[in-house]
Image (cartoon, rainbow, N blue to C red):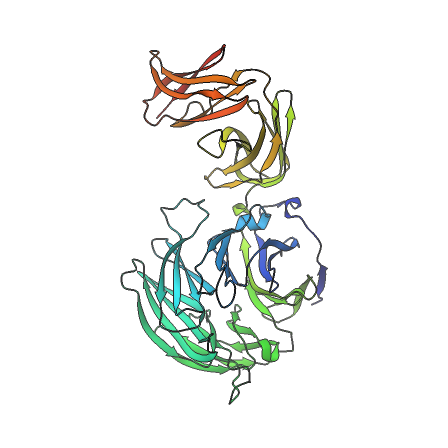
Length: 553
């Protein structure tokens, strides 16, 4: 099949609308050894962003799981300083809508690899191997009681496995937990090679975590990968031909039902991992020793003659093989090895840690292509546009002051603008903020009908000083139990802001102080008040105004 060559172009993801509801095939890769970046390619549209976000230091592995992307960073070697897990929603990365969140990891661990598994109760856990420590770390990635939009992971515990140099791994889920098969490659401090896969039994409640067994495999196991028949393949690199005797790549095939090696396959080279196509054919890269693709039949354990194709970091999406090399990423038919497509990227830059997957277009957020604000005679006019929308309930408009604290909350909700549901046509929106002064920041909270939400970028506007006294209608109204009361002072004034019930009895004093000229917002929490009609009254110098609000619990 004829190969197509695509040169890298600077493409802004915000400028590419998802013009249909078809699933999108995408890939991410680690670019570089220092000053690493996250490279993004949309295989469905041809969109390429060679440095979507900074990652590292020493990013080792990328994982896509449960609609999220995770990057494991080992940090500085051998101290592990600045080690972390970076992560975020896949939809954010795909449209470039948000930065990566970084979860710091303690020093002296050098996290290396990550694997995930789910329990029958839909809890999701992540396991991270710590290269310089005889341990693995367990994280809770989500749980039914968690806020679906909570952008964090929860560290649970570190588990000592009594063997140095844990690297890649795979997981076999069970009813009450999981069995974790960990490749113990070598002691990174002494550089002595190991030949063991450690099997650790993890229980959901953490009470009975225990070592099940250690399986003797070939020299220097780098990873454990499950094939399409459920057997585990320990990819053993050997000693790169530098030892006595020289040992090259081998595969130790493990039956997890018996925790025993059922076959050994001599593949040569110095492979570090393997992928399996739909025919259960294993495909490896020969690594440092041969740097070419190698194949074997995982059903019969026989090697397969393979034409010379330069190796690299491998990934599969369906039966498309992705090979990341220096300066380029190439796609092949995983069944025939016919070349399909090549992306020419930064010349000389190494690319690795590839992950590829299909994203349902329905999971993608609204694509915001413009958001701006400008001062007018009536206040600040906010304007924004979308290129396409999916499941969009609307936009919550939020504001905060730059030059002073105006409320007990950092961001104040000003109003809600209804969205257009699902549409592939461009839409325009606006919102007028009448009660504003000074330097302020705005952002939009786009909310789906199912409650999922995303934040826009933040913009800043200098609104100047108000020209007259004003008391605005509270928002939201009716409310439960919080609402925001906004007012403006054209000059410095002694301010009294109080709340009264329908009988005229004062129930709360919100403000009783002298305040400088400007626009103010007060966040009222009426959790201790009963449902009903209330009045709030502002007095500032000779200016007095009263408005009605309704609390509905």
